[in-house]
Image 1: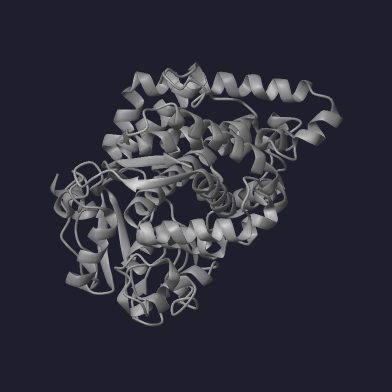
Image 2 (image 1 turned 90 degrees about the vertical axis):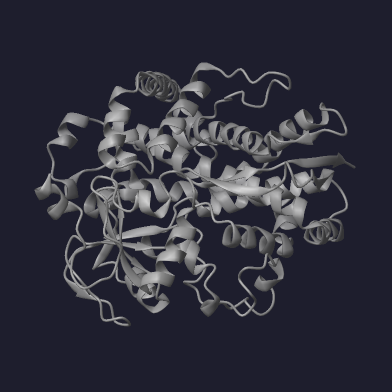
Length: 486
C-alpha cells in the first residue's frame, strides 16, 4: 500500500498541487466526486490557490492543468508534441476504438472516413429532420395544460436530441417523442439510455471502481448486446440496398455512409500494419456510432436545456431574438438563408456555451520532453496536460465585458475579437470536436423553431433555481419554465 501511495498518489516535481488521496486522487478533496462542486469551479479554485499551472489527480490519472492562455495556445498548436490525451474511461463503454481518442495512423484512417460525414453540405441536409422532430416536441407541450410549469425540460431536451440522433445516424425512429402521454421506450432506445446512464455513473469515479462497476453491471452488458444486435441488423439492411439507393441515403444517413467504408476482408486487414490498413471493421463502425452518440447527444441536449433556462431568466434577450426572427421572416418556414441571417441568435448560443459550458476541459498527451514557453514549466513524455476550457471562458484577463455577466452582445461589440483560445466550447487545435458544426446547426434550428411559436417564462424561484449536476456534462439541476404558444 505504501508503494502504491508513493508511486501513484504523490506530488511529483516542482509543480504545485494538492497531495492526492490514495485511489481517489483529488476527487474527494475538491468535492467533485460527491457532486458538491462543478469541475469548472474546482479548476478556478485550484488556480486561485496554486496559480496558472498545477497538478491535479482524477483518481489514478495525474494531470498538469494549464490556465495561462499563451501556454494553452502553444499546447494546442504544436500537434507534433501534444497529441490527444490518453483518457481511457470511454473505452470501457465502447471498447477501445473511437476516433476522438485515437492516435497516429489509426486516427488518420478513421478521420479520413469520418470527417467528411460532418461537412456542411451533409449537415444542412438534415434541416427538415430537425424541424420535424422539434415540432413533435412542441406538439407534446401543446397537449399539456396551459398554465403548467414544465419541470422536465432536461428530459424533454434529451428525448428530442436522441430522436434526432436516431434519424440522422441510423435513419431509425427511436420513438422518444411519439407518445404524448407515455414515457415507454422501445428496446433500442432503452438500451442506448442504459449505456449513457452507466457512463454518467462512472465518469468521475476512480478508474478501478469504473472498471469493476461496468464489468459487473448486467444491465449495461445487456444494453450493449441489444445495441450491437440492432446495429448489425441495420448494417445488413444497408448492404441489401441497391447501389443507387445507398448512394442516395449517404446524403443524410450516417450509418449508410459508414457502411460504404466497411473493410472487404477484416481478417486480411487485421494482419496489416496500421499504416497500411484501409476502411473500418464492423466493430470500429459500431464504436464510431456509439462515440457520436456519447459525444453529441448528451452535450447538445444539455446545451439546449441551458438555453431554455437562460431564455426564461433573460426576457430582454428572448424578446431581442424574437424581434430578429420577425424582422428576417415573419412566417413559419425555416430556410438556410433565413438561419444564416440570425446573427443575434448565434451570439446567444455562443454565450450559452461560454457561460454554461457543457464540457469543462480538453486533454493532450506529451509525446516528447518539452518546455512551456510562457511559464517555463518542464513537461516530460507521457505527462497528461489538461486545459480547463470552462475556466478560460470566465477568466477576466481575456474578456473586456465582465465574464460573470450573461450578455450575448459581447460577441457583437467589445468581445467580438476576443482571444481565440479564451472561448473553446468545442476544444481546439487539430483534435477539436468533430461534430461541432452539427451541434451548432441543431441548436440554431431548434431554438429558432421554438421561438417562432412560443414564449418561455420563468416558473418561479423554487422550481427554476438553476444549479447543476456534474455528470458527463454539467446539467442544469432545477429548470421550471412556463410555455405560452402564440
